[in-house]
Length: 147
Image: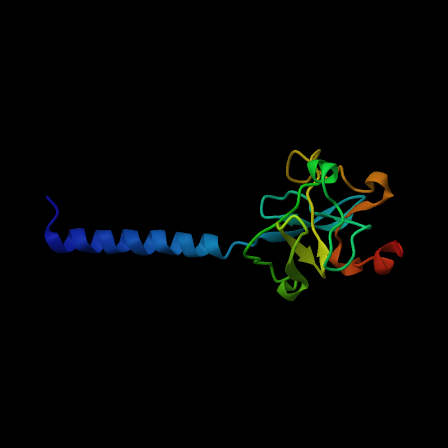
């Protein structure tokens, strides 16, 4: 039988450990910077799913609607935590015309690609010559390739 004081100490230690785990998870990055041969550096979500930009969007505005969103779902996180290799100030949020929120990078909306099934997939790179991964060192690209 455990005496009362030992039991209290064990409970306190468990609470502290679980609290520390929760705190640690709260500080895990929601955006990561990955690198891939042939692609270079690119942004992903916390699960390693690639984030893309659409060259037809403009700063602070998404034009991907309707069927476009079926293939290119929006990326949104209410809390952005980045590793030291990225600048949190580069990320923001817009409210789309459909009233959904969308995370942005340097003002440009971020998307997933429906054909990317697992971490590290970059199958959306170059689709239609208007969808690209986001390389922070080279973004925006030539003012988004002058649309």
